[in-house]
Image (cartoon, rainbow, N blue to C red; front, side, top):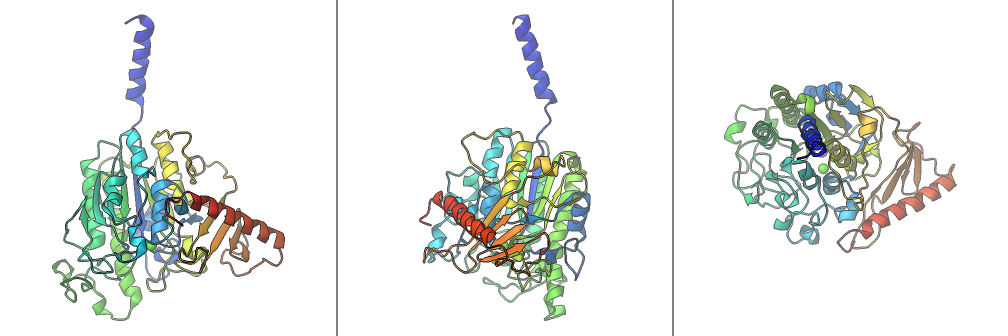
Length: 451
Ligand SMILES: [Ca+2]
């Protein structure tokens, strides 16, 4: 080896040994939780101390939005960095095998978050809800995850894992295989074990809670589905149960939400105990707004799950990373599809130049306090039978302007969307209506499905 080659070799080795291990990434997603589910956002009924602590020590994202107003679309955006329409995942994947949308799934050819992270040597796991396809080809293991303990449908019994149509739905990797316990606790325990087992390599964990989606069951509640329906399971005896205060839905919801909140605390503690806090990013987000039944809607946002008003998609968002964020409140516009590109940059993943992502790297805004350029984001629902946009239609956010079909709001002065100003700004209304249709149709053209 000549001298120049030796120096180059030395520099290369120095570079490798000095290169910091890329950060561990944990995304905790709760299901159907609006601002009313978290006390540091707008829960007036009870405290959520662990989620609040994450917010206090991290960045509380006051303008965080799910890309869908229901489950499947948001999860597709989180996994791909794309608008859900591009992957044909803008509909809820229905659990009934007779339903035509049962056949759909996140297309294999789309690059997923865990697949991209493999370039930097990450090991990846999902614990909990998938909801991105029922067929074997759509299993998380076929989308880049190394481990999966959870369910593929939209919701399960919290004790015995039967889905809405009575199909057993708890997977350990690609095999149906039960785990005994309350769903939120299983998700937490699997996460803690995975962190311990993989503490020496970069890991990505998608902690995907079923709470507080229905069926609404606390740890001590009766089983609602499957052969043991009506019984309290052995792990539920002596635990909080709705039977103590029948009809008090806030009490029931408190015990459902607090099981997930405890899990948030245990995950943070595990990261700290193993000395990983300085190189770990934890996101806490919801997949869509709250529901009337689960009492996580809030007067701060108009509407609820499935609405295109803010209550359908402006949801709790937190990013915790002690070495990277200065604790505080951020008013940056952040969406589900930005989490993947933001983390890929932190993970030193280089994406092919021709690969288009709709989400953007928000590292400069969140971690370096740079100013954010104005963004334009759309939400859209489609009735594929009629081939037209229906029910809630289309929404567009542009700076502080918000279009909801033929209504126009200025969120800077009217965050609760109480004053429709469409008549005062007819040209703005028209321009935004034109733009949202163009963006929606552009995204839909990439869908591998008919619509
Ligand atoms: Ca949901």
